[in-house]
Length: 554
Image (cartoon, rainbow, N blue to C red):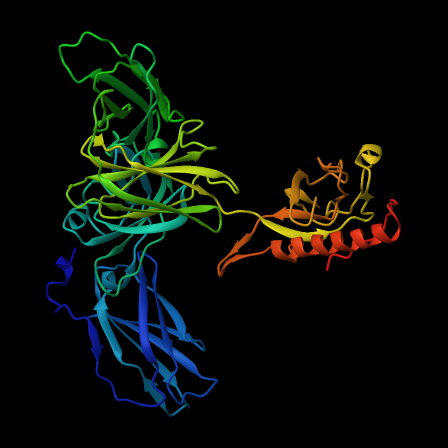
């Protein structure tokens, strides 16, 4: 602080005792503005009248006092310098004869100053997480360069990014130009303000904003790598698909690409498998054809700043057999189209993790395409699958235990995802009873199945052939007709009812039926059975005639 002019004055910051009065102004505080004025604020005394006049006295030590009269609880007095000691008090004029005084506040002007805002501020990239920050003071700044270098200023940086539009603030020491508090490959918009290093000082206004982008950083995280191996051909060559996942923060950085390389484990082998190079951020797989021998594949992420550590995986040989590492695998469907997977491990092995694969399948356990997959830490024995799970599908779920870069044979389980629910929504407007299928096989019943009432993924026609069997046919939800189901024995075929397949709705409390699903499968079948029995009785009474009527849903 430039205080050479104050050497003969003790540095006094505090309040001089004054006679207490219930009319004395309270909580006096002041703000000094360079080359302008000092503005002071206070609160009225406890029993101060509503209408009262105040006098603000600003006494420059050793010189005359400057006065300001006001009926309000604030007032300003011109001052010429901040680098001087002042004693300030407020007088409350209760009456012509009575005056109450506040405590006297004595301080150096710079201690309670609000300094001018920085004249300019700019940023420039330095390293991926670093920026060079510089500012310049306006003309006639109250502090000298030496005082600034000695640390008599405090600084605050405020910034926003496209992903964080709400302003964030950091306390920085701008005596150092380079600051490594930023994220790589990110555009920033920032500004600064400053204050004198004292408890009574006030923040300056903000500088103008500066916009700059940090430079790219070489990927630091190792990508996750997995493989899908298909059956070998007659010559022993196997199609292999390498699959990988990269952290989103790195995948969004500029100019990112992948490099994949595979080679035989035997260094003396002369087989060239090939590489996958210059794969963009949208690529998450690479296809190879590898021989029967053991192969080693590696994957790295790169950008203009460098490359990540390589992920390495081993493709076992065609004849290699790994010991069994898992004991059991169990898959349970959950609401919201999720699958819960649990497994147990044989205790005699030390593992480094697990890989869970799943795919839609039919009657076998082979995937119809590249499987979905995720890695799980070795400390857990289960996970919940969400990605890519659809309703009413059979999934093949396998779990493989890993030891380093190698994986065991794994265990596979089949499970259906959360099934849709059969709902009673309508019966036929004109249920058609057929005695002779040969003569009436082109009859088309009509119904009012929900088409205009609510969306329904599909409809199901329940057609009891006999008292012991029921045929079910799925038809599109927007169809309103159906070719009757013919009995192979020529017995009576009754189109008994129509239901809709409706998906459950997931809420915070759990799964519930959508409001347009008024009943369960049991009620639907009961409705169809009652309709069938009524049709049979009616047919017998009419001696094998064809009738049309209404069937109650029950």
